[in-house]
Structure formats: structure tokens, C-alpha cells
Image (tube, rainbow, N blue to C red; front, side):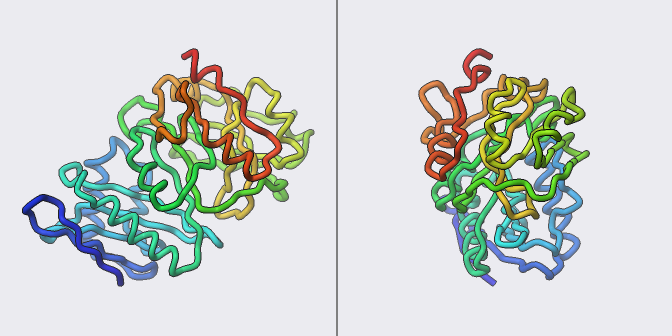
Length: 295
């Protein structure tokens, strides 16, 4: 078990980051503390029932017997899905998040996995930590969360990874729904299926994932914006991701998601994804987002 001491105040006692391997249950009081931490951090967190779950490798930052930070990852094939990061508001800016990220990264390295995760675009702090640890952006999804940060707010996420994703064809079409999030995702394998997609009046987040053979068709469809590449875990193949330009998308664009300066251009658009995907032999290169400029 790894531990790392960090100082949370100039003269204050140290906090210790502890690793809790998958399969080892946490004490009930610790799970309750973690739940309280997320309630202080988010308006409505959608994974409360899974916080502290023994199916994940978890990390706690403890100071004076109290949990002041938490992070986790879940193994899906060759990927470590990094998730559930929170630091108590009173213990931020003292290196707690960095220590958690570093401890998590060491565990991922020991397991021989590649990181995959998302950063909320409320600030660039999480993006900065992920960049420092060698991750790069793969897609930007507007309005993935609703009501999580604060009531009524559509929050966007930036997906980051260590992988060098190359888009592949969809071999097993599917519809993936996350009812708690109001998210719908279509994995489409044929042009005929594209023409019969239902729910395109959906008010929540909706996207379509396709292989290279269908990407150009969606790229020329004004109903969609190109988000980048994504791997819908636990699946292992990356696909082109196109987001429906609906009310959720427009509301999130209006919120002006924060991006790390190195990952945006002079107009605040998502520059890095175009360069990143071009380097990875992607046939479709995202055009400038009109709505990002005009809204």
C-alpha cells in the first residue's frame, strides 16, 4: 500500500494518502465520510452509491483522522477509468489533489494500464494536473452533466487519456443510456441505421459514435458537432464522436466551459483536439464551432 505525506497548511499537520486496493472494503464510517465530502463538493453527485465501492481501487487523503480528499479508478480491459476525484474545499491549493493524482498514477502504472478519464470544465485545475501527468485531450462533450455542479447548470467534460487512439469501425451496434444523467449514446455501424435514428429531439445529452467510414457523413450534417474520439468503456475500441446540437448542447456552450490555455485557440475554441486527432491519422478534422463564437 502506497502512502505519501503532504502538508496541507504552512504550519499544520501532514495529510497522508492511502491506497485501498480493489476487493478490500472500506469501513462504514469511511464510506460515510467520503459521501459527505462529495456532498460538500457537488450540488448533486450521480455516483453516491458507488463511492468507496470495493470494485474500484480507491485513494484517501487523511488529515487528523479525517478524510479530506478522495480518488478512484476502475479497470476495464487495458484501461484504468480514473474517476471520483474530490478535495474538501478547506484543503485545496495545498497539493492534496496532486498527491492523489500521483498515487493513483503509480497504481495504474503497476497494473500496466492506460489512463482514461474526464475533467469537468468549471476550472482548468483538473486539466492541468492531467496534463502534468502526461495525459492529452481526446474529446470535448458539452452538457454531459446537468445539475451536478449547481442546480440548472449544464456542465461540460473534457476527456483525457494516455492512449494514442485510432478510430475503428463499430462492430456491435448498441444504444447506451445513462438515465440518471439523461445521456443517450448510439453506436452505429451502417449508413441505413444513421437515417433511422430515433430520439433526435432528445433534450438531454445525445451523441453518435461511428467508425471512419461514416464519419464524413455526420461531419457534413449540421445537426451534429464533432466532439473528438471516444471509447465507450468497457468496450475497447475508439470511435468518432458526434454530439447532437440540441438544447443541452446550446445551454452548455453558453456556459463557456473553461479549457486549459494550451488546449484552446485565440477564440477559446478546442484547438488541441484538432491537432491531436490529426496526428493520430484521423480522417475527419473538426471545423470551427460557430456556436462557440456566436453564443
